[in-house]
Length: 309
Ligand code: NAD
Image (cartoon, rainbow, N blue to C red):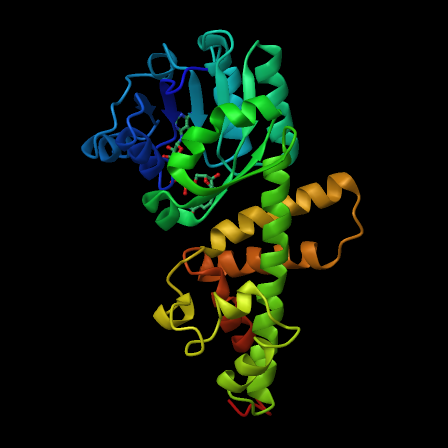
């Protein structure tokens, strides 16, 4: 792969738009495409060259980068739908297929197998860091793929992110992402339940924070994304749970974790329960709120007869 390969960038949404802009600013030749005209216009307004079709974006590209909502979108775009040729058939042999969407591990492995079978190279590289990280070029990339393919995509991942971790073979990036978010989803519920219990027992938020943040309860959900206002001034709880990391995305990632738990037969109990809890949270108004807003759900659904809050 040449030092600065031409990039077909498909999926110019909340994340893909700013990621494409950063690649253009770093001097990469980008041909952007999205099925939604507004996404195309927004990227174009920030200097991203736009292609008229997926085929046009892929023509001459050394890398096909996708940033889609789901694995089905990725597989459909790779294979093509309704008899139309997909990206795999349109791209020149040996093209690097780099998928940054968050999708099921099994789907990532299937997408990689299809790409390799079609004579291409493939890497999965889901991200964390949200829209703020996408705009600032400070995302974390969790990467699955062959060593030399990882080395080949690393320079452009370095443009869009500040941490790039090779997690193993195909699907390894997705695996690392959902395992991390399984920890995060469960730990936020635990921290939230502890704060609500503390309220009932007459503890101030600050007292519980001062103890737990310096004791064995310490975790990111507590010390960075603290679900109550006050102890951590930068946490979303201080701005009425504006995300941050939206409840809809946590619900999505835990569904992917649940699928993987089921397909691998892990005897997990908290993961499935957390998935159910965030599904309900998202369905009952939490989809657009930070996932730490789960504490308001727990508080609202608690019995108030002995509350000291
Ligand atoms: P988004 O819905 O804003 O963007 C996805 C874009 O893909 C849309 O503009 C859509 O029109 C486009 N698209 C779908 N099918 C297409 C096709 N065949 N060709 C071209 N464009 C197509 O979603 P997002 O928030 O940008 O998230 C993208 C991915 O990143 C998701 O998998 C999400 O889980 C993951 N992610 C998001 C965040 C976040 O904070 N938003 C954080 C980490 C990871």
